[in-house]
Length: 370
Image 1 (cartoon, rainbow, N blue to C red):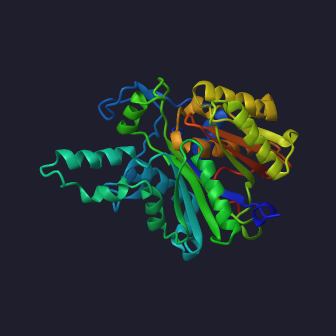
Image 2: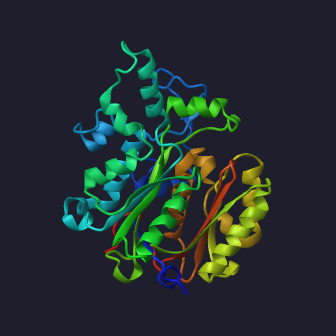
Image 3: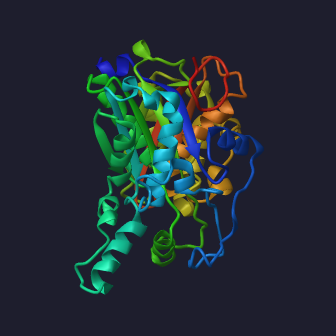
């Protein structure tokens, strides 16, 4: 038996910035209320083709993080930096928070807006090669993760994982391996997706531009070895599984992933209390939901809202926000000995599943459980 299966890590804290609001409490409240967040788009601020979107309300990078170092920071980086600060809390001021702390952040492409802005400048500037130098660091896919590490002094492995909608599960799986092999003492993991003019038009013209609404947000988790956790656990990360749907049969692929995760985690289907599907649009999402219901049952699915109906398509942040939603709902239930399943599908073919063992008690959302 491998080290990774012998000692699964625990999630000991989390935060989310979403269309529900600017912190974990706002997110948990929105989930429990089942409150939709889509609103008319201000086309003066956002020259986009759609009329409605799910945006983080009142999100202002300079107000949240201060003016220093934020002048050219893009929306995705601002979301991630703010959420990481919320998870660390006062620890961000101490050396203990930085030494040995890894960070893995899921994304789709990084900030499409910054990439396009920089490319456009290189063509239309007074001289083609004269661009805003401060934009260059943010045009890389790993800009958000790097900026988080710089701001909070995180000195462990720093990784960006670009797997689309399942990226949050990918990031958790990645730090699970880091912890199991002793390459980090603890880790932060999550995913982020920004709303932008560039993303809106890409969605509009792309193969997935089927009229679906767009959202944004981020969820970040503190993950620690169970034997050395500094906070009380919210959940144990028992298993993850990843598949590629190459024949269009998303239902069969999801079933395979879910059953593999349950077997690897040593959990039976009747132990699953909460099950969350991605709410992806079209046949892929419908097949995913049906497969998850076949294993976990309708009752488990009904305990957590369909997140896509409340905050629309949050892109790479989708799976991470699903996990945050499961943890929010678990705080209101008797969870002793129970488990949660989270699945995610991307129309491009990626399929992922995460299996959590829920903590036995219920405590407030997000922050440290001392």
